[in-house]
Image (cartoon, rainbow, N blue to C red; front, side, top):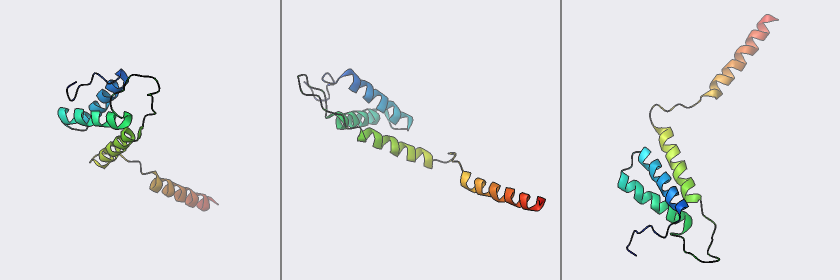
Length: 106
C-alpha cells in the first residue's frame, strides 16, 4: 500500500476529513494544506485508518477537532468588523436611568 493511501479509512473518517478540510478552506488555508491538516486531525482523533477484526474498536478522542474549532473561533472573533454584544454597559445605564426617573416622580 503506497504512502497516503486512504483505502483503510472508513466512510465516516473520510466524511470527517472532508468536513474539516472545508472548514480550513473557509478560513483561507490553501487546498493542499487544508487536506493535510484535515487528515492529520482525523489521524489524531482515531489513531489512523481502521483495521478490520474483532475487538479493535476504540473510543475516539475528539479533543483535536474541538481545539481547532476554538482556535478558529478566536481568530474570527478578533477580525475587524466582528460584532460583539456590549450589554453590560447598556444594562447598567438603563437601570440607573430608571432609578433616577422613579425618584423624580415622587
